Length: 123
Image 1 (cartoon, rainbow, N blue to C red):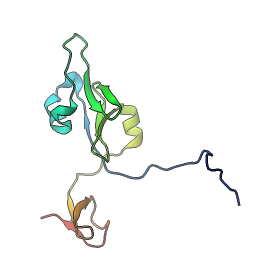
Image 2: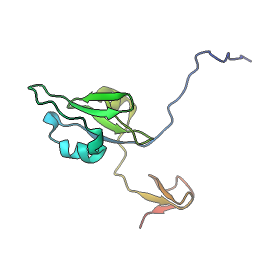
Image 3: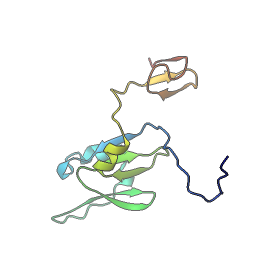
């Protein structure tokens, strides 16, 4: 049996989580949707230049968001941009999202009936 040293490189699998994301449209045509999604406090002032770039506040500081990027809401409620190729490799679109109320946990946590024994469609 192999013994792993404490600081040796090990393989990890990303936990399956459901995230909310918004595609940034060309020319920032959906700026109102972006603002509604991330909140005005997370949107940096836009410098009006011919090649202006939208920036959002993240845990790592202000980050540029360009058309075609996705803005992701993380599991702790934080926002960050993601390039489209990375997004497509990492995430799959869920079927139409119907919110269920999970009576097992008494919270709206399940996205499919049957995750827990007593999940039902929220009234």
